[in-house]
Length: 396
Image (cartoon, rainbow, N blue to C red; front, side, top):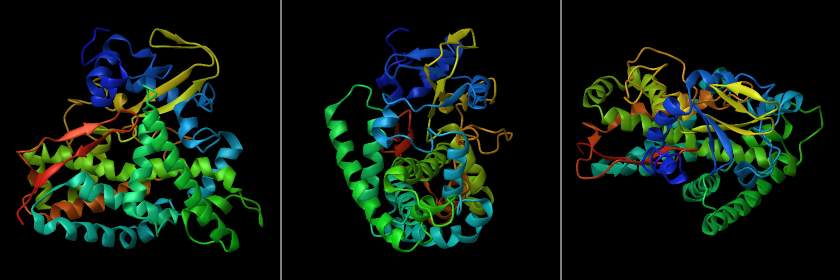
């Protein structure tokens, strides 16, 4: 590929992966990326083929992958079979649709109100950093049990981890920042573990320790730490970035923003879901090939790392009409932002419910919400992608 914005390089992917993905879908739908030593699968149908075939494309537990460096192994994403199912039981105790409905308002609305109140009178803000990210971080932090940990502390964790996962250039400063965050995470999780060891409680930390285990048995801290890091990384940022992405899509389309403002409660969930398709917050999920496999004219050799590129699948022209456009009224078709079973995102009910509330209240309480014409909207990342600068104004 020529050296242009659509060439498959780490820099291009980080700045804006969508021109790269569009070209790959057309010219090389299964392409080897030297930067991460993995095969990118970029078309919707091919991603589903790989994602649904857990026997051949099982979870990747390779020690040389960035996930091993950032999260540790084994974790819920690298496990399979009985061990995986048992651990998921613990994670999902409070994350079923029914359980989420029973507490999501109580969890989310006061936090949303707190952050809306902080910006309401200013008439302008970066909605990602000042509203959606803080809401997500605080709510999920509280669910985990990190009620005493500041938002700034939690935000630093996931930024350091996300940068570590995308550190294709092997920047030592990124690794140092990651190591400092991981040490802090270990210390704080250790304290939560000690509390729940004395007496089980209703935190996600406690559920992961005891859930699915025989009576009187508990998982060790060492055993659950990698999985808790997965939950911290995905959980803290995903609902906030998904809401920011959806809000950016709405505000970039004044007609849809107007419709949304007229009845936020009626449209918020639809808008949030379209935001998930338009910019997948978690853009890639890794697998490893158990045997040679032919797909889209390419043989993926046994033992190879494979990246299911959900961010590309969600913009596949063969699946979605005008996929580059945000359109909350598009014909409903399933996207793949929450991954594939048996590794489908455990927190999808909570993420959608939180995102719906955050978007609804933003459009309800910030009158004439619009993009700031004097500032630039910015997004970054490819393994994790979000609108990180969402400059907005409203009538204060």
